[in-house]
Length: 121
Image (tube, rainbow, N blue to C red):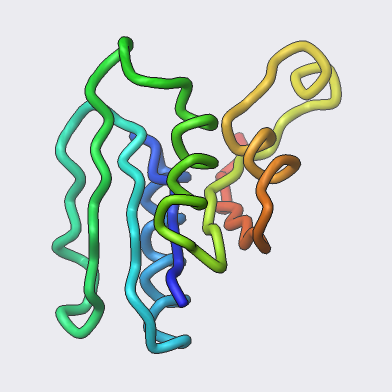
């Protein structure tokens, strides 16, 4: 079994990586982190007992991030996908697509969606 986590450069990505590591540890399996940012992924918070593979993107010429994650699910035979989500208004959902929303709807495997708590003013 493999747990895959989609990690954008955002607080949701940090939360997803932590949840993905916890899920992999709970299941006693390896973790594949798909780095959706163009910066190196910091895996220093992941316990050393978990085998981590980081898949890097190579810029705008690379595939659409959601398509890349969906293809990587098949290639790495992942059995669970972990994503970070944020609260969006109904209008925002209707007008703007999101990588997380596409992954939630199109993933061929179970998805663990992690929502971070945002402080409201």
